[in-house]
Length: 320
Image (cartoon, rainbow, N blue to C red; front, side, top):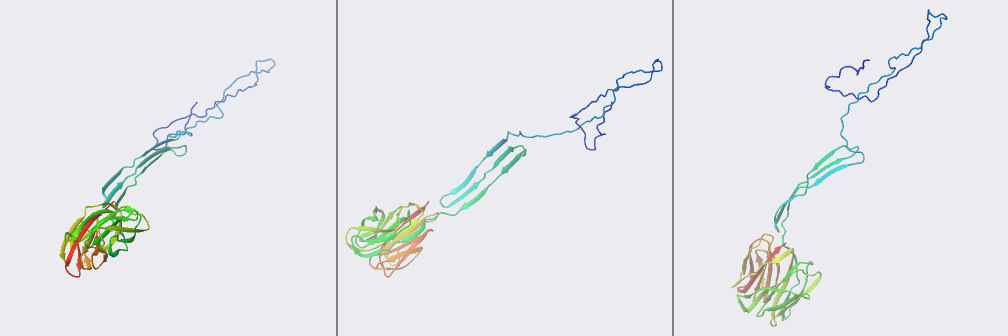
């Protein structure tokens, strides 16, 4: 017998695989009756058994190349890497670089294979974080041994109080029920007998209207007020200046998220103006007071109505 697979392979096919999925061989017995001339009765039955070619013969060629996952078993492989590269000069500037790659391989019955690589880089620079002016108090001036005035600060703000007292010094102060720290003091023309300019501070101010109360060494003419600032982390060491002229001045270094607050006090003349910063308060005609602030390094200046003894004090507020 000759089996034929359908001729030579088509062009481009260099190999074939034969898989006999079905093979059938049929044998049909056959009985014949024919005359025999030698027989007297002339009737002879001669059975014969013959084999004829199969009536049906099939060859099935089904080459297949396949890779598949199991129907019930799914394979997964996940790897997540999240490196972070950052450059920071806090609090002024921050530079961050984040890369989050992910490699995933999954095998399913109908989804044979999947490969994914996801990269999510981000490059950003945050804005400089500076100390921010919050509020100025109501202030007070007159003659007393216990001056007081109201202030409303943002909760958590840092509060500074400045007091010019003619012939007196500050002994203590409170912001509501909390004691304020005496940060520094300077005599007018460096002589406390002429009067003093005193700087006080309080961190984490409570919310709402609050009374600032000050105790002086005696009942004298005074002028006092307060300013508050947010985003204050630390407070520097005060710097001072003094003299006898109509133009008080004080040079202080700022920048890098710092804010400089300066106060000038004079004995018998009022301030008529200022430069070198943002003026926040001026008041009083005797034991007068000027308050200003500035972010960059600057020279604060005040202008008096006439030459007078004066003192100046400044402090740097450092940001978070």
